Length: 142
Length: 228
Image 1 (cartoon, rainbow over the protein chains, first blue to last red):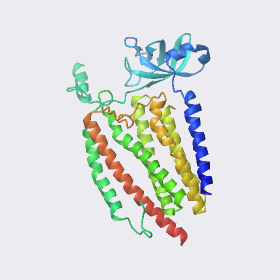
Image 2 (cartoon, rainbow over the protein chains, first blue to last red):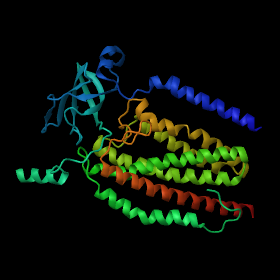
Image 3 (tube, rainbow over the protein chains, first blue to last red):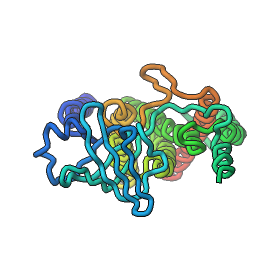
Image 4 (cartoon, each protein chain N blue to C red):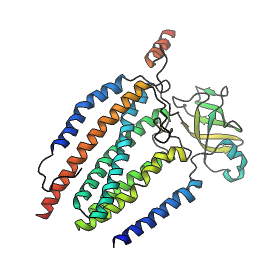
C-alpha cells in the first residue's frame, strides 16, 4: 500500500519536473530583447509583447505638458525607439533596465505600460546624499 | 516540535519562542528604521525588512510542512499531521505578508503593483496551492483520509518552493535576483542593512517557531474534542 503511494507520488513529481524543466522552460519568456524581436519580426507583428533592455543614455525626451516619453531601448546590439504616454516611474532614468509592454506601430514601439527593473544591490548613499539632504538641496535651489 | 500525549497548555519552549520574539520585535523595528536608506530607492528599500522575512518564513514553513507530511505518510502518527497543518497555516500568513509588502514595494519602484513575471507567478501559484491544502482539509471528514490527502499536497506543493526561489535566476524576470544569494554565498548589501535584515529574519523565525508550536497545540486540543 505504502509503496503504491510512493510510486504515485514519484510519477507525479517526475511529470511536474519534466513539465517545468523540459517543456515549460522554453515558453516562459517574460520579455523579449530588441535583438530577438528584430530577428523574428513577422511573428510578433500586431501582437502585444514585452520588450526588455536598457534605456540608452542621452536618448530620453520627455514632454512634461503632454506627458509624452520617448527613448531608445537597447540590449547592446539592437535598438528600438519607444514611445510611451504617461509619467515615467520614479526610478526611471538613463541607463536603467526597463520592461515595456505594448506593440509596434510604424517602426515605433508604442508602450502601454512601463516597468522599471532595479538591481539586487542595496547600498547606503554617500555622505551628504541621503534623501533628506538631497530634498533640502532641491528646496534651497528654488 | 512534537507535543506530549495530552497537552493542555503551551510548554516552556513555546513561551520562550513567543516571549523572546515579541520582546525583540521592537528592536528589529528600531534597527530597520535606523538602517541607512538605499542610494537608488531611498527609504523605500526598508520594506525589505518585512518583505524578506515574510518570504523566508513562507518558504521555511512550507518546508516544515513537507517534512512532517512525509513523516506522517511513513508513520501515520496524527501528531505529525498537526505540525504539518500548523506550519502550512503560519506559512500562508507569512507568504501573504510577503505578497502584500511586495506589491506595496513594487508600485513605487517598478511602476505596477503586479505583473505576471516568473517570481510573482510562481509565488502566486505557491500561495494558491496552500490555500488548496486547507480547502482539501475542509472537504474531507474522515480524519485519517484527511491527513493522508493533506500530506500528499504538503509534499507535492513544496516542489514550488525551490522553483519560486530560483525563478529569478532561471528565467528572465522583473524581480531582482537574491541580495543574499544562498547558492553562491554572495551578499550585495550595505553591512548596516544586512545586520538589520538578519536580525529581523531571526526575530520573525522565533515568532514562527512559537506560532507553529502554539497552533499545533490548538490542533491537538481540537482533535481531543473531536474524539470525545
